[in-house]
Image (tube, rainbow, N blue to C red):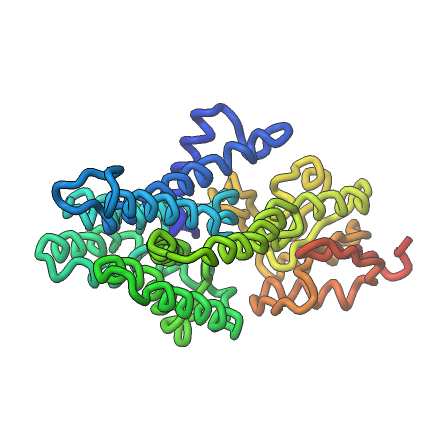
Length: 419
C-alpha cells in the first residue's frame, strides 16, 4: 500500500542491514541510523546548491576563481547560497527526519547542476532516482524547462523521466486514496506561505543575473505553485512534497548577498538570523513534532493492566505503539486480523466491521485502551472505524482521557467498571 515510498524503504532496509541495527534497537542507535541518510542528503543538497550558484556566477573567461572580480563573486555566491539553504528551517526539519524528502531535494538540486552542464544522460538518471524516491519530484521538470532553452538534449532526457516513472505512477495511482485521502484542500496558511515564498523570490530576483533568475525563480515557484493549483481539484499538497523548491530561494538569496553593497546589509542579515536560530533550536525539541509516540507509549504503560485490550481509532495510529513492543505486546489488539509481518504491510490488516464488533462485545473484554486522534481531527468514515466508535460509546463507559502531544489515550470499561 506504500509503493510511492518503496525505493526509500528499500534503501533504508539496506542501511539497517549494513549497520546491523534495527529501528527498535536498544537506546537511540536505531533512530540515529534512521536519520543519518537524511542528514547526509541535506549536506549533499547544500553542496549542490553551492555548485549551481558557482556555475551561474562563474568566473569570466581568462580569469580563474580567486583572482578577484567575478571569480570572487562566484565563490561568495556559492558559499552564501549553500549555507543559506542549510539554514532554512524546513530544510533543517527534514534533515533530521527519517523520510525521503531530503534525498529527493538532493537529487533535484544535482539534476539541476547536471542540466546546466548539459550532461543529459546523468541528468535523466538522477531525475529518475529523485522521482522514484517521491513522484512529485517530476514537478521540477517544468521549472527546468525555463533554463534548458529548448535544448534537444534536455527534451530527450526530460521525456525519459516520466516514461521511467510510469510503472510506479500506475501502481501508486491505485493507492492514492490510502496515501493522500487524509489531505484537504490547501488552507489559507498554505497560500500565505506560498505568497511569502513568491514575494521573497521576486524581490531577490530584481537586478539578479538573467541566467540565475531563469534557473532559480521557476525552481522556487513552479513546483509548489503547480501542486497547490492541482490540489484545488485533487487535494495533494503538502509543503514537504516540494521541499526542493527552497533551493531556488537559496540561490537567489546567495546571489543577492554576494553582490550586496552598503554597511546595512550584514546587520540586517544578523537580525534575520535571530528568528532562524530560535526556530532551529525549537526544531530540536520534541515539541516541534506533530505527535510523540514515546509519550503515547508511556501513557499506555501507565494505564494498562493484564488482560486489557487496545483499539486504534483510526487504524493507522497503530504506528504509535509498533515501536514500543514492550507496551504493545502486553495488550490484545481487538481489531487486528494479521500482523504487519504476516501481511507484509506497514500496519497490519484489520478485521471486518462485523468481526470488530463481535471482538469488542466478547464478555472477556472488560477494559479497552483506545488511541485516538487529537480533538478537532476529522473522523475517518470507513465502516471499520465507525463500528469501533459506535460500539465503544454504546457498550462501554469512558473512564479517563489522557492528552499527549498529537494524541489522546482513552480508557473505556464496562458499565460500572471504571476505577
